[in-house]
Amino acid sequence: MSKRIAVVTGATGGLGTAMCKALVDQGRQVIASHLPGEADTQAAQAWQAEMNGAGYEVAILPLDVTDFEACSNFVATVERDFGAIDVLVNNAGITNDAPLKKMAQDQWLQVINVNLNSMFNMCRQVFEGMCERGFGRIVNISSLNGEKGQFGQSNYAATKAGIYGFTKSIAQEGARKGVTANAVSPGYIDTPMVRQVPEKVLDGIIAGIPVGRLGQPEDIARAVAFLTDDNAGFVTGTNLSVNGGQYMS
Ligand code: NAD
Image (tube, rainbow, N blue to C red; front, side, top):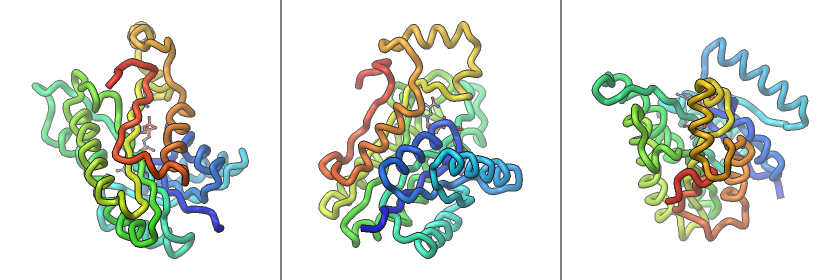
């Protein structure tokens, strides 16, 4: 059988990179997406060279997940050049924090657009084909803060909580067709973003994690690989919290 085609959005970041490696290890042909624009394209090319140099063959294409038309074109390109998409990991996401008292409408809309509208923009393109072919694996990356809420992140938490309702709904629509949809909710993961937190604050965060450490990107990638496995067809509509026990839902 030819390799299954797996797409990871926002793939060149901290978690996306580990996901791409895990999917390659799983025998998938991985198509990574990166933000368009000159600087992002250069960074993406360097990322791809590093991945290939480390033995991880990945293709990479530009995509702004907030743009429905661009998502449609991206999927058409992947289907033409590689084949139908079997696995979709909606990983692209941003934060733009402020307490509600200070949050501008733009801040709210931007985060909704990138983190939540992207789910529709991408799933809408691939879901029907997956159902027709009788196989599909969709994983939507949520967050611990979508499960519990977080001071200063009402926009981010709303999008990440919204992912659960979306995921459970399409899981029901795909269940008889071999298409699963699940969410993964990372806790605090050792990525450049989290390492920027002042040391004292970070120590406090780690003290609140029962496992006693930050997560590693590979912890999240393993969860994604589990849910996208061909043999994971009985796991659908669920949320897999990967947070070291910080929040037990
Ligand atoms: P990251 O910033 O390293 O990666 C996010 C990627 O999304 C980047 O490559 C960025 O270019 C891309 N992106 C942003 N806007 C985009 C757009 N409009 N179109 C396409 N791509 C876009 O962050 P990360 O830590 O790797 O996070 C990955 C996912 O995991 C996000 O959804 C994030 O919310 C979630 N998450 C991360 C953590 C953590 O501790 N790092 C915790 C919980 C959830």
